[in-house]
Amino acid sequence: MNRNADESETGEGLDASKNNEDRYYITALARGLEVLACFRSADKGLTNHQIAERCGLPKSTVTRITYTLTRLGYLVQETGGRYMLGTATLGLGSAMLARLDIRQLARPMMQELADFSGTTVSIAMRDRLSMIYVEVCRSTAALSLSLQVGSRMPLAISAIGRAYLVKASEQERKDILSRALELDEMAFTAMKDGLERGLRDYAQFGCTTSFGEWQKDVNGIAVGFFPIGGSQLMSINCGGPSSSVSTEFLLNEVRPRLIEIASRLES
Image 1 (tube, rainbow, N blue to C red):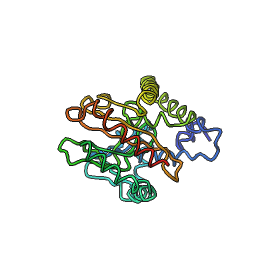
Image 2 (image 1 turned 180 degrees about the vertical axis):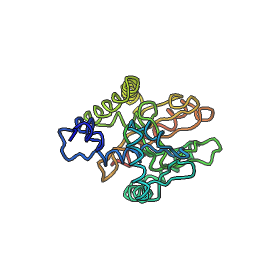
Image 3 (image 1 turned 90 degrees about the vertical axis):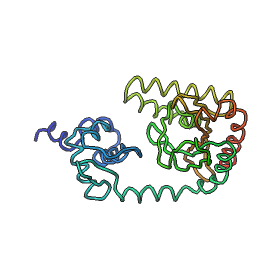
Image 4 (image 1 turned 135 degrees about the vertical axis):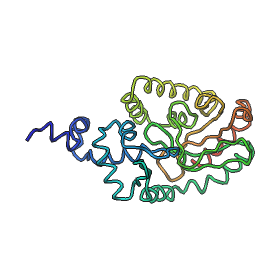
């Protein structure tokens, strides 16, 4: 049997070489999960070609994966051949959120801060090179940010991402930087700069900042914390449009309140 052809068909060529120290690594499963993870809340549906570009996989491989995931209910195919996440993924996400007791504890404090500041207050967890919101409280202010549970924020240039980087262990930071380098040199440089900026902010303010860096008209600050009874690092942020939420207000009025909330969620 032609070994190269066999590896190409099973998808265990390059991937297996990367994981040759872990004989339990299942490449096909990993690829299927990567396909599910590439969907974003703003997507109106993705074609096999778009999925292949996001995941860095051959289109023929993606076609087999999306067919399988559709049969299992994790994807649904719409008119025009585009795929959306199916209801089977909702069960996984709901089970995960239900396990996060910290959300119930944090929500009243988050809402109080959101109402006081006229901002959006959120808690997020890391997924690869981004942060995913798992709880969001917003004020009734017309200009508060319209972010939802499931929204993603970049690790490198958002306050909530930088807060995570600052609190992460040295090993996790190395893993994150290594993953960024796999993308390209620019991603690695941005991640390294984001970490250094976060460390400087923490030393000066006790929180991380992002003033017009994630989006030019948005200001935000954040704090990382380990929730009570849990070992999985999270971050909590507070932000809003720069037209109504100034850097001075965030640092002088909001910062001590946000730090206190993080401390209460951690101790």
